[in-house]
Length: 483
Image 1 (cartoon, rainbow, N blue to C red):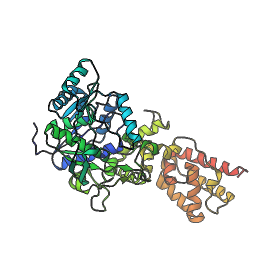
Image 2: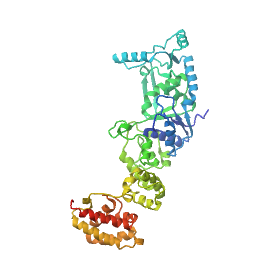
Image 3: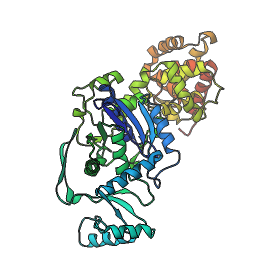
Image 4: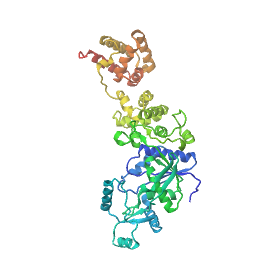
């Protein structure tokens, strides 16, 4: 048995699909709490609901969690490997008159439910099988009649407990159903398996989403039935959309895999999610992992839902992108450039790619934006000719300026065609014509965009030949009489 004084928490996802972004936040809160208290975090896969289980989901959950480099201390453990243990413990509850066999069919249960709804009574099991005689039970079992095992919930009284986030919470036992512990196929329900595992894993604190709050009285009753100590509970607030609706797939991305695929960095998601519902008590928004371990406190987790602000996430991701070394950022961006068909795998100039990434590092907010931001370096560009015009500058003036720019750049030797030399020559013309009149049309004709890195930097990467070609193409566009 583990030392009782050691803080032990667990993260227990069900393999029913992707890892929800809210699930990752729950893992982070558990992880930080464990590390802060020199405790342990256990990873447990709750895979007893076979109808909802998705093939490969457990492996995907584990793989996704590993990308954050926040290792768990024990596990992963799979509940499906311990079904026999749950069955025997459920049977013990029956033997000690804390649970009972229920032989009601689904049709009977549905009929009772509809009658209760018609009478405007909250649907609950009517406890039809609760007082069956031992003879009736034996006859039903002998005849092969399917059954479940239900918990004997006291008919009167209250369940009270202190939640570490919500303080005192109370439930009237009249609202608690005689819940099923063991299903007719011999598999445990979530409630039974979760309580048994938390006990035998010596979990001291259960930190999970507030959607599980109504389950607490059910779990406490199971602990009491077994005469086991009850862990401390903390239920964290929901993540909400800007309109205060629950964060769901219908309104946007909710899976951690989606955010990673879009190029949000693991360190960004860690920093962002911890602050969704937790207040450090200061204006600080950027935290290192060491700072989070030191400053995190369950007492400062708010009760109300936390708004998932995508703009804030983009801003924070941009901050972390700017902190990455160019070598690392280039490595991270390469798959996105390949996916966008801008470069072919193993058929590119790493030196050139690094220069391109360097130009966009300050503007990049997500890694998946790199293709759109840099496509003009790799592909032919197209744009509306009027985009070349700066403010009140006329078509003939713009055309003449582009010809002057071409002459200036053409005079630069190929070996000296670098951004500093290009900028020096452009500044000479800008003093005569104006900064906007020179740099705007050059920016557009080289990138095809309103916003881009400085044109002298683009020109260096494109090279002299391609730069002059694009200037020529712009002049031809301005010759088009359709403008």
